[in-house]
Structures are given as C-alpha cells and as structure tokens.
Image 1 (cartoon, helix red, strand yellow):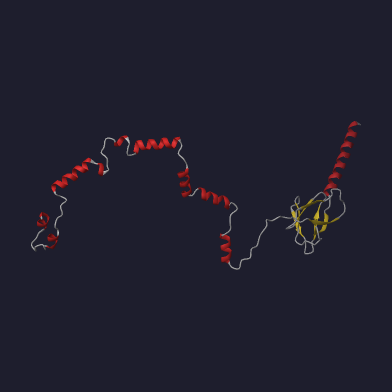
Image 2 (cartoon, one colour; image 1 turned 180 degrees about the vertical axis):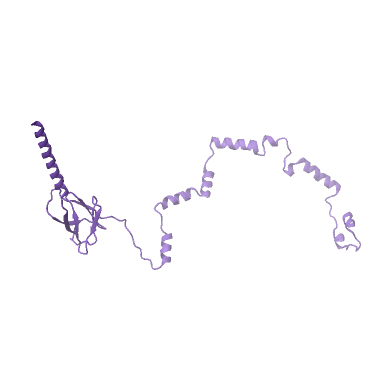
Length: 237
C-alpha cells in the first residue's frame, strides 16, 4: 500500500514539473514597437539605435523615429543617439500581451566648451604681429627674472655690497699667496725695471761703451753693393 502511494506521488510531481517546464518553453516573443523623440520639443529622431544586450541584437529607427523589434518579458533595452544620453528600459516580467509600445524621450547630453574669442584681422601678417606681441600670463615674472639675472645689474650689486669678514679674509689670503707681496716672490728681484738694480747696471755699462751714440747710417744706405759680393761677404760686413 505504501509503495503504491509513493509511486503515485512521484508520478504526480513529475507531471507538474513537466507542465511547468513546458509552459516556460512555450513563452512567446512580444513585438515591441515605439517612437524615439527628443525630450524638449518631441522631435522624431531617425537613426536612433535600439539594442538588446542579452539577445545580442538591435535595430534602428526609421526616418520618422519609429522602430519594431521582438523581445521577451524581462529583457533590458538600451537606447542611444548622437548628442543624447544613453537610456535604458526593462520589459515587465509579468507582461503577457502580444505587443508592447512605448514613447522614448531622449535627454540631451550638454557639454560645456571653453570660451573662444574671435579677433578680426584683415591679413595673416596682422595676425602674426598681434600673436608675437601677445604677452604671456607670467610675463611680469619673466621680466623680473630677466632684470635680476642681468650681468650689469649683478656687477653693480657686487660693487655696492660691503665686504664681510669672510670676503676680507679671502682677499688677504689671495694677496699673500698670489699678490706682489706674496712669500713666493720675496726671494726674487722685482720685475719693475726702474727699481731693478741689474737693469741700472746694464744701462750704465752701455753708456760707458758708447752704445747709445748716434751712428751715421746715410753713407751705408747710399753705398751700392759691388756686383761680385757674395752672401758670406754680406754677412761679414
């Protein structure tokens, strides 16, 4: 008896499950029709794209913004058009009618652009001159940097700046090491001829020898060399 009841229960459950699966498999497609218009002025938008991601298919609106596409309950519909925001729509899951209609109002996608100024120039040369004369936003800083790095300005500042302790010490050490009174030059005679005793000695000797007497070079210049003079004779003379 128990075995018979168990068999009847299994048969009834199987029958119910089969009917449910069969009902799901017999779900019919819905013809989805509609019109895509602009949101503000309800202008028809031809060429709008309607796409069903789950089914992987889509369609375009005709020249009056009308479209027709088969869908199933629960499908997500994507609407897109150039210059408008992408919109989404879902077919109700419990919808059983054979057709479904909707009016899709697209919202404009507004993009703020930077300000553009148009300057009237008669020729291209005038535009080039105006462009080259245009000052940069940081032109004041550039001019101040050029003035502060000018070599003449730096030299004037250096001349007006008093020496500090470090500068005085460096100047003193440079004079002792490399100046005229440095320790390296104390063992040598001065290079100034007027105070050089050796230079005075050579001068006195040249006076005693008569080297400073004027010579008469006119006779030598007026004399013509003889024709048979050789190079050795000229050197000896």
